[in-house]
Image (cartoon, rainbow, N blue to C red):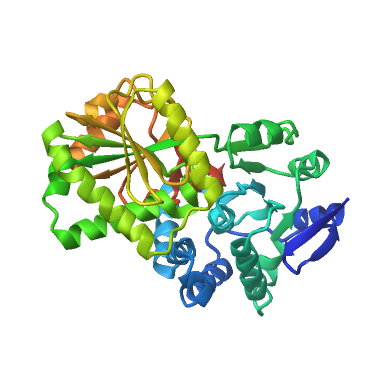
Length: 409
């Protein structure tokens, strides 16, 4: 079988030969110096890249790969070790990232390569200038002297939905990482892994936002603008297509407190969207409009407010009966509650991220303890919804991507 290889060296390659080369590659070590240098160079280039300056998600990726962050991750991985345990790579990791979030494949590869693994990444066949740019930059850096071993331990290939290719790649994998939702997970899982292989799966998820009304009310104009900019990043990157993008805003406070601040905040968010050139395509706006009309008919929607072409807010009088369908494209459900405890009965295993503003640490910890694993795997400040980290969907990714060899003397 032939596949298109994007990294290293773009061109058509024989899949069997590619897999043989990957499995024969010299084993790496967690946080090896050559990989740390590669990531540092990548971050430096990306942070100064003119293309990245118009794609904020690329600047976020560059920030995540900077030297200080890599050093912190190495310390955290080392802290997991015990005197009688040697951490070694898991082996060949087969990554199946989503097609709708352009940078996930780099985060997935980064966490795995830092663990010393050999990596095979399947890229979607859909066109993406961001993916093209990242592949070209990584390929250029891997060609530099001193990175031959790192180059031998990575291949990024591009193909459509081809069960035979997926099966051949899966048959060699020690770990398979499947992003992209329930349908993707089910389709890829049809391809068997070796007996020692295991899956890390990231299925369809839903996320929400919690705002303390009194905290928002205390903001001056500059503070409100900063909050609006952070909300813009969470809502508008990837058109709310990312699993961690908020689709519901829960205002915590009295109805009177919320009434004083809600329009002020949403007007500021819409203004940021306009200033940053966000112009939803007509198809996106039509899908959002159709969804909004259906939600009014079928759900607990009691009001609607539009803030320019890019933001529609549907107000609901209760969470019970609110379905988790969503069109993306700048639509938020909005509810008011006296406390975070109103989420206790509504949250399900489908819910992933709660972005928050204005709450004390103990309130967030108490919520997590009450939910007891029934839902919500991340509670992060507003502005960090899309910041992929070591802990994701309940996994400790760093711990999942190494093997622990027990050595008793």
